[in-house]
Length: 116
Length: 114
Image (cartoon, rainbow over all chains, first blue to last red; front, side, top):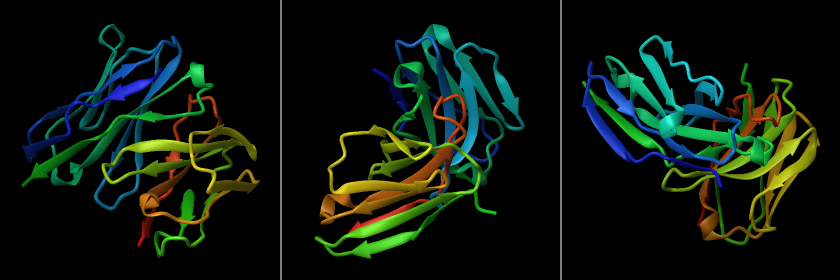
C-alpha cells in the first residue's frame, strides 16, 4: 500500500527564517514519483516539483530546495528566508507503478504560517 | 489562459438535489482526474480517466457519476446530494496516466449542501 505522512500539521515562523517541511512515504514499488504542491489561501493547488525514485539528487529552485533520501523514505522541502507569501498548505504526494501511476496519494498537508 | 478550468467555483444546494460540475483542460493531456478535499484538507482521488476511458473508480457512492465526452472534458454529476458531500472538488489533468508527469489542478469547486 502507498502512504504519505506529513507529521507536521502546522508550523509558524517569522519572516526570513528557514523552515523545513517533512514528508515520509511508504511504497513497495521500486519505481515511483514524488511531488510537492502548494495550496495558498486562495485555494488552488500549485505544482512545485516532481522527483522520480531513481534520481536522488537534491534540487534547488530559488529559495526552495528539496532533499530526497531513499534510505529514510523521505522527501523534505526547505524554504530559505521565508516570506509572508509562502504562507500556505503544502502537500507531498506519491504515485507508483503498482497503481499504473494513475493515482496521486497525498499527505495530510502542512500548514505554514509566515509572520511579518 | 487557464489550463484546467472548472465551473462553478461555488455551489450551494439543498439536500436531495442533483448537481453537476464541469471541467475542461486545454493542455492536450490524456488523463483527467477528480479529487475530493474534505474539511481537514485531506485530498483523495475519486476517478481517473485516460483518453475518455475510466481507469480508476475509488470507493465512491454511485450517486457520483463522471462523464468524459472527449479527452479535454471530464464532468462530475452528483445525484441526491447529502450533507456529507460538502467538500471542495478538484479536477486535474496530466500528460499521461503514467505518474511520471505532474498533475495540474483546477481552482476547485466548493460544494456546500444545506
